[in-house]
Length: 122
Image 1 (tube, rainbow, N blue to C red):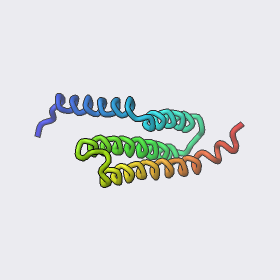
Image 2: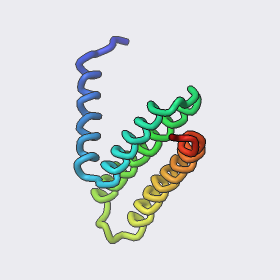
Image 3: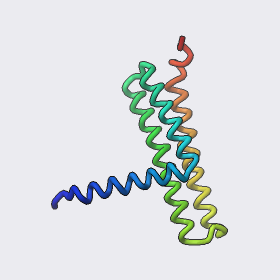
Image 4: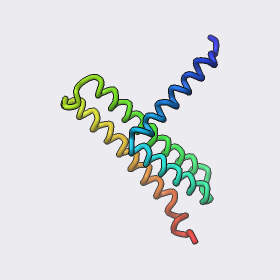
């Protein structure tokens, strides 16, 4: 088994195109990126414990990854069956719910982690 740097490079380019497409076409993804940057700024500013920093990073990556998956499933669903088909609508709704639950969970965890720092902020 030989490592192909050419294929590896192509994989990174493909991933970059997917990221760029989602960033350009999905408003929610752009909002999530902006919020993620702000949260990372807070994580650097406040003296968070190591486990808090790790958890913040995991939650950011979870929300962004779920949104990327949602976008992929939506695009794929649109190829398979016309938009009006009831099963496609359910699939899209379930994926949107997955993003919503992940985002709410991240927000709850974020409040839990940042609240003590924000309350004592001067």
